Length: 233
Length: 233
Image (cartoon, rainbow over all chains, first blue to last red; front, side):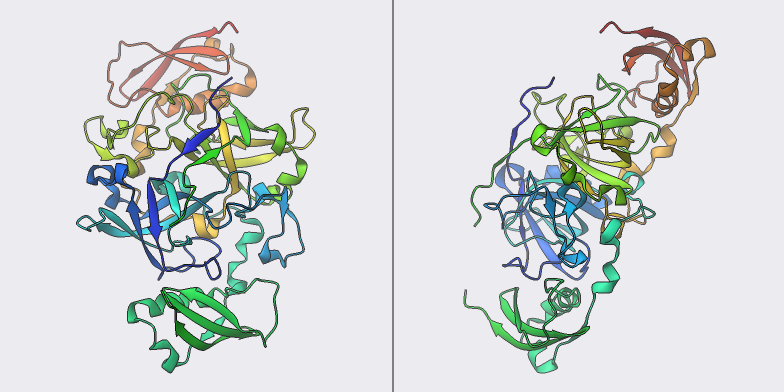
């Protein structure tokens, strides 16, 4: 028998993303390619040597902690939003954040390394589904010859396409956002950030992204942005 | 800033595999499909409910701890055996076990669930690269629409085919192994378990598998088994 089985993990990095709140974060990594984020190493790991050769890889795995819900518990089953909220699945058959060890696993695309950043070297990545400031405990290269199984059965999670919406973002509202954030916002909204089992065309939802609060409504498969507000810091 | 960033993980399961020693374990998961293992849940998670629906998935992710080397430290760079042992790569650009948080990530194929096992429910998996008894901290379903990137650049790790060897396992030795273990042993040997930068045709290597000690030599790309011994318990 092995001993010392509980163990303490310490962050190797933190993410800087445009998500200051959980609402709106894509349900998995990689769904919104236009989303960019920075991975800033913690001082013991802030060392160019630790990243040597990493640019040979297109994708990275991040092992991180669901930090937004760390005071909540877990149950043996969860009701995945994508199943309408009524079907119970075992927690190990889902990617739910409410699990015995609240560890997240995300595959992100490596855009590059900013070797000379003041807080660097910094990894620039696309597609991250992590809240701003989330602690990361490991970074590993994606190895397609062992990690890629395009033919795999994906269970209920496979039905991603059904959940996209058309986005109507009026020009006069869109220009209130910094130009470099617009593509990402459109991508996030197209994923339909609502809880999946809500269907109330009158309801106005609020989502915070990159320091802006966006208000929108959804009717059928059309999401319409109705207001944009800059958040006070 | 988030607080409480170090955190304690507790095992949710342990693996029962045929590897009682590190030597011989395939360098990544999935390389030897004929390898079977059992995942036995720890008592707080030993609950059928926690696995409800898991059979809808072909593959699972395991997040586990490199337990064989837990008293060794890590360095910013490692020398991957597949590069001949002379080239240094940053630890985050490798899957090396010697990393800041010694966490392993493996994709295994789900063969089925033994719902009625005495120590059950038990997950039966193929392709695991884990030492017998390794603690597992999370089990997640593999979602091909986010986890699969067959087109990804895989860096140096992509050259897997170059490292396979032909296996000559004389019949009179092979029959000393239990029939149900033979395919797996042949698969493990074909991966060439030697340290990659050793080339000594005279040297006899010993590998323990499923309670047997196998002795073999490698000359060029031919591996020849020279002896099989049952290990004392």
